[in-house]
Image 1 (cartoon, helix red, strand yellow):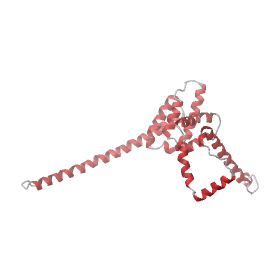
Image 2: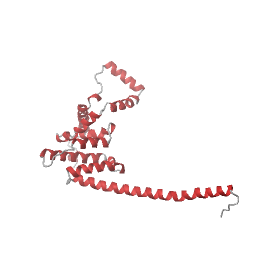
Image 3: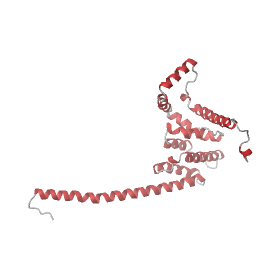
Image 4: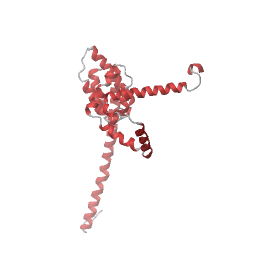
Amino acid sequence: MLSRCFKATPGSEPKKDRSEGRGVWKHRVHSCLQCFWPSGRKETNLTQGSQAQDCKDQVEKESAPMVQEEPCRESRISAVMVARLVNHLVPSLQGGDPFFVPAFLCIYQRFATTQQVLDLLLERYAHLRLFCEEDEQIKKTICTFLDTWMDKKPEEFCQSSALTIVKQLKNFLVVNMPYSDLTVRVCMLLTHLEEEEATESEVKDEETSEMPTSAMHLPASINLRRHAFADPELEVC
């Protein structure tokens, strides 16, 4: 049994394979994003003297460069660039690229909201044709991406604040993919969110209906006492 778990002799060879795998993953993600994010590349052609100076500066200010670079990176993403990234999601899956979509889902919230990404995606595929083999393949790929998106980011779809997003998604799926498993999943999720919203609204209505009953009697008693002090002949029971 041990020979099946460890096919190599004890040593550092398994660790080396895992580290190489992580390195390949990092390189592929970086290269995929650079194709659509050229302005975000960092300067790497530094001389040895400048590298030594940079190391010295980093020792003096460890966290300052990281805090300053993040806003700059976000500000370089324009609306056109976001649209290009969204438009490449389905083709990347159709082309067999396993890295682009996971990388996009990890970073898209730095420069766009879930609503914005969904709007761009549904606008891109708003006119899918019926009984078209090419578009049928696109529909299947869209389902794959949306399933992955909902699995990776459940907080963006499974909360009451996401009711508008889920409704929009359901309307798109019912028109283009009415019999898909994803449509059933989204319809069930929408029903659950609507029930939650109805329960929350009922609780709020009960709270607001109870508050005026106690608040309405207090001003009346105060006004009555004021009249009693102002007019000595008025008797207060």
